[in-house]
Length: 440
Ligand code: TTP
Ligand code: MG
Image (cartoon, rainbow, N blue to C red; front, side, top):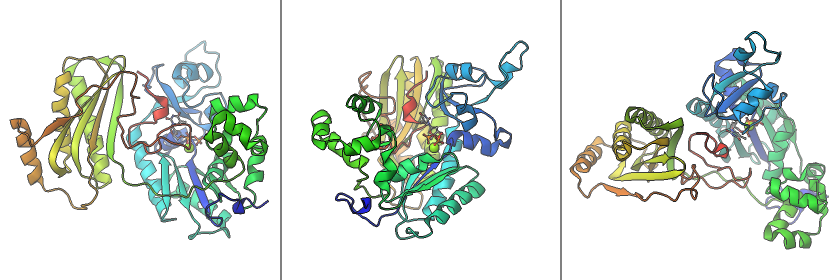
């Protein structure tokens, strides 16, 4: 059967590539520290050298052989793969040891930026879905002929020019391309041609079907549906009865039908950075230091994206989950790192005596229209007015959000929920991956 001509396939001729870096954070660490190549390497979020708290952001493939995987507690990872230094102490009976590193999002983001630049040379239609993956519509730039060579050259250039390793999947639909990029990881590529999509899915576990998470997979298993092929052959009415409209949707995906086309994202609505303390902090100086660092990181991000901002805000999380946001709007859009810092610090003043477990800084009301820098005139006026307490500068969204209702990553308004990977925000401009939640 020719999957490309199934009803519901929008552009039969569409050629979609999905590019996903291999053990991305670990690959970044290896890029700047080549001695780590070939070693079992674990990158921990909320982890600090020598400690046992935090969670695994990613593990190198060597570390995965020891059962270490993303989102596992560092303490558990350490049981499976002891830290190198620990094992060197006399009496250790662990011959196999690994190296642990804390996350460094700024660095990974800069590496991701280099990869993105390279991808944008390949096609005008690139959709970034997370820090390390993107879809490319290569219908016009590559087509089906020679697509294997294209994928292989792309992987080579990512490796030689950026210094990280990518896997690539190419298929007529986005969902098949995504599954394909995962099939031969690491350092792999898989091409699924039109007409092969349904066969390609047939033997895969049902979790590989777009829109099927672990919960749905369990329910499907109860119906005797374990492979994508089983799902494709199931009665759509029965599925609809059980799962509603989504039942028919996953049935279609399992049959290789996917009408989505690769659409580049619009500009983000806000940019933010946030960071958690290991234990709640009361010390004013320490809080100010963190906010200063975050403010600089956000201003730098905005600068790289050529975005000006009219609103500057902070997020303060008090234990256990009290999320407070404060923001101040300026009379016009600006681009001034010092102003981000001084307003963020000023807003933090209200929390001078609070115990704080997480802090964030955000700029919003973004303006991408002007390539040139904002004139400082508007700024200084704003700054002055602000300290005068004039109406020209307003404080907004001063209401504390309800504890437990807002996820810690909700600070990022621009994150659209991902339909690609079980709810991880697709367009997170925030620090770190949302899936790991908080690791205070
Ligand atoms: P992934 O692409 O899912 O994982 P990966 O690149 O580490 O490994 P793979 O070779 O299987 O693609 O995620 C990209 C990065 O996102 C990953 O390097 C670290 C981060 N991440 C988290 O912080 N938490 C998570 O739970 C996951 C899955 C990823
Ligand atoms: Mg990856």
